[in-house]
Amino acid sequence: MNATAGNQTIPNTYSLEAFRPHNLLEQHRLETFKDWPFPASSSCSIAKMAEAGFYWTGTEREKDTATCFVCFKTLDGWESHDNPWEEHGKHAPQCEFVKLGCPEKDLTVIQFVELVGSVMKAKMAKKTREFKDSFAKAAEVKLDEFKRNRK
Image 1 (cartoon, rainbow, N blue to C red):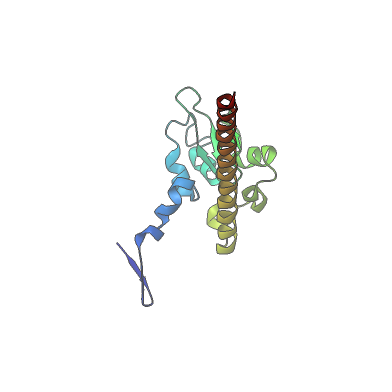
Image 2 (image 1 turned 90 degrees about the vertical axis):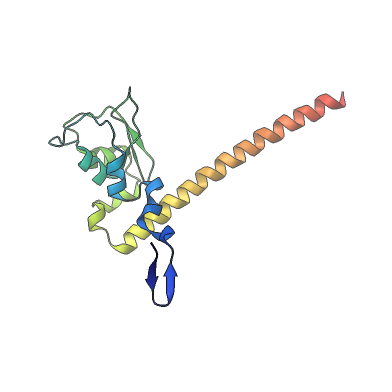
């Protein structure tokens, strides 16, 4: 389905689904929690984890692992009485989401757009580092191969 804005047709690639792979929306973070060990009544419930910026990155063996969508801080060893906002702030005080100190529903559009920008900037920096490292390793292998062939 396409939407229209004025005289322009906006393809559905601009829908909120575009945010899903980045866990930018609380509703998408909620959906990641497949095997969270704590009940909805606990301080460390799925809803409270997602509200505090976390998405599930656990495994079958490590069910209580979650990562922040903004600062990418991964925490495990959660207890049912832990407060996700407090733990997030304690372990990642530099996180832009923690600094805002409010759930997604209370963010202004400008705050949300700035968060999205910082997430995308961090992801681009990570991909750039990975590419640079991969390129350097490949160049090193080729140089070694060149040196061997010259002997």
